[in-house]
Amino acid sequence: MVSILPPTKRTFCKFCTLFPPNLSSVRGVLGSFIIRPFCKFKDVHEYCRKHANTHFHKTALEAAKSFLDNVPVDVQINKYSQESLEKIDYFLHCVLRIPRPSIKGGQAMVMEFWTLDKMRIDEGDTILKNHLEHGKKNASYRSVDIQNEIISISGDVIKAYCIKNVKISQAYSILADEIADISGKEQLSVGIRYFDEETSNIEEVFLGFAELTALEAKSIATAINEFLTKEDLDPDKCVGLGFDGCSTMSGKEGGVQAILRKKYKKALFFHCSSHKLNLVINDLNALPEIRNTVGAIKDIITFFRESVLRRKLIPNIPKLCETRWSEKYKSIRVFKENFCYIMEALETLSRDGNIATRKHAYQLQLPKFRLFLALD
Image (cartoon, rainbow, N blue to C red; front, side, top):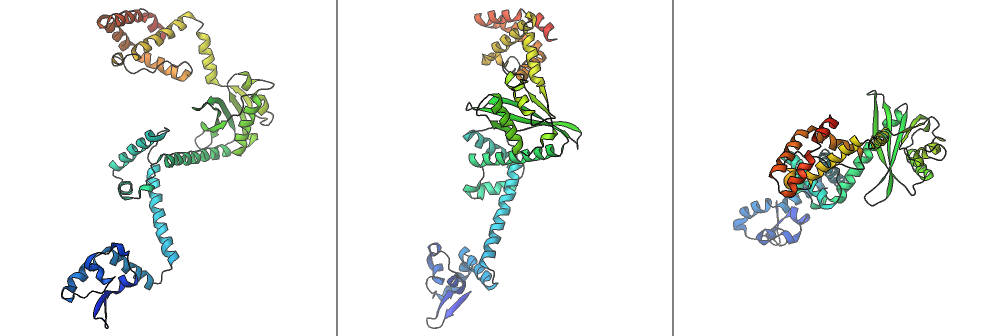
């Protein structure tokens, strides 16, 4: 390790001298092997052992070995970069295997991801644990921007997989509907139904949104056509167009379906079955029995949901949604399944509540037999 220089009869460490460490990290007598000669030969063995165990001496040894082995600098850099990339790749693989909720926005999203990461660590993922505890703070991959980028890339991969399946299928249909996002911009949700030859099933997948500049038929038809053209889908394989029944979408002369059928010649227009069902349900509201039943269900759900104490008396029932028929059906189904518990709770409140609660609960009890018959 040491090299004795005859003119001075003093000692230097040849490795640390030729490949010196950061001098600010060298302190005390140990520094005399590097920045000044060592001359306390009485304790030379003790100090040599201490010096040999320092991290900067070991670093100098590795540097000397690499120099003697004549390893090019670019190879050393590439080797280090490759190891770093492999670690990052493995960590990202661990991150992507964690199920991610479809939530957006700031601290709430980051905290939710941290909870999921902790769950995976508790299950025994030591690599993820070591990375988060000892890795670089600017490479934890848990910031809002990184998480959004991971979600976006995952979406692109899933979309590409779906498009690939649609392209190899024999036929497909287009589904589209307008919707406003949280910022108030009108967007067109585009979906595809196709026949999967592997499973021999009809599959339905959501492909994405197309932003609308206007809501007239020509603009909507252009947006749908540009979306499908961008994905390179064969127009001759399109056999169906599924939209709602408004004149803009379903018009025989100037509607979206009429414009698209000029290019997608094999496609037939079908009124969306869910929209049809909603129209039928709305028409049924003309019957007093159905109208009054739905009104009574809505009043009872509101009665229990407007008080925290009342909510505890019955299972959680979703509020009756006026715009989404699927949610309205869910509310009525849950109401029917818990009808007996609800009636018992109303009976209890009609006896034991305060004056206003007793009166309201008693009034809601009156149509219970008609409700039971209607739900049944």
